[in-house]
Image (cartoon, rainbow, N blue to C red; front, side, top):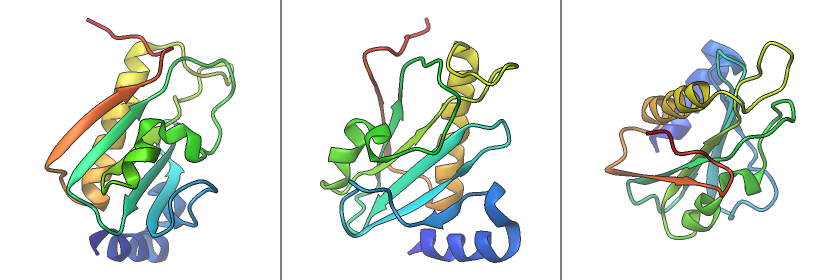
Length: 143
């Protein structure tokens, strides 16, 4: 599987800035391969790819928060957590920290962090056939 080869390369040659194949957080379905890390802007991310990956990705956009960014857990995948059991991959990121270390206030940053995550997924796993964007009730839809 491409993600395993890429993870080995990332660990050996590039280190944690790219993301590291990680033991999945508690609550992620068994048989899921996980990659977790921090992007160049300080946003944490978590990607889960099930063994029966069907070529589809659920990108989860969570709402605002005042808490400083932190490593993500299973619940941070939102509906993607359930979708993993159906063969969908799931990916989520925290928002990057602002000037005082908090996160989640800049809609533009949130959109960029989600796009960075989509691109990272493509680099690690390959381009998905279809992407579903999900969001929680606190997320703001920009027009």
